Image (tube, rainbow, N blue to C red; front, top):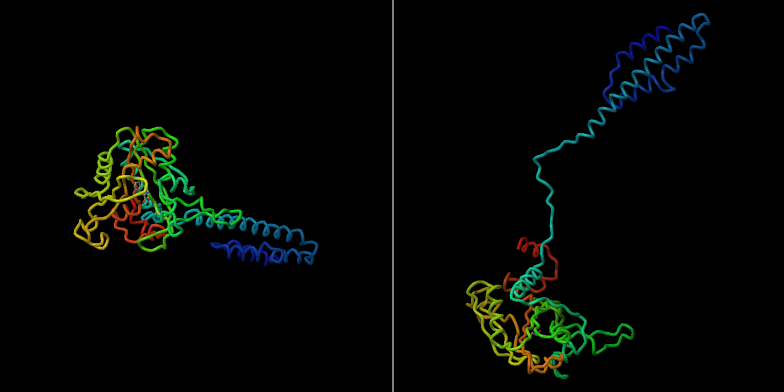
Length: 347
Ligand code: PHE
């Protein structure tokens, strides 16, 4: 028995542990209830009475040695484990994960630019409802009852939610001129405002048409406002917005709410006026409608047309953006394709 104890003593002394698996083997062999030391304690009963005490002491010594080694080895294995997890390999030369930020939508960029140009010459920004009554969208603007723009083809009429009936009085505004009427009703001249916003027309969606687009309209009402002021203002806008050397022309036109009326063309930004698909080979593209506000419209809003005159204009933000950034398909604006949107990064 004492020989056995001595052998095990030597074995433990020589033991060396460098992994959790080895530690477990050690525990099974020497510490656990099924290990060799427990077995020797079992056998102690059969040792003759006279020797039992001495053998028991030896056995206890062996047990303590095994426990002491086990504690030390456990500590070593724990330290190895924690130092491995707290210092993961770091490669400081690796590139960082790119932080993707969004970009401004081209229509927002152009809207902001338009607003900036007009604000600098004394216009402020006005807003109004997109769901509008017939009066503010058409009636007050002198559209006769049978005007084709009121037709179902062009205008989205709004259904009454309760009955599902089509109410002929409410509609999605077809232009932001409704804000001009609301302004003139509320405010005494001088009025000098622009009104950016979303407008709706019942068109089939294609590269050249959309049922929703954006306008910026403007109005200036005061004493002695003349056609010259309209021309000066829009010349200034074109000069600020487009390439140097851009030509501008006023072409007589008709709108129910202005008299006289003019459409404004600029030399094509894409071909420089030589002729291309965008300008339909004419060298000119239309950018805005304009005119002197009809005295009847001024009177409709409770302002005396004998005392006050004014001009108004309206342009499509999509069109201006198309000319500035050569966007040839209107659908790109609403598809949220990042390959398109990224091209406006940093502008
Ligand atoms: N409201 C017109 C449109 O949407 C544009 C316009 C505004 C024309 C003001 C003349 C004066 O087409």
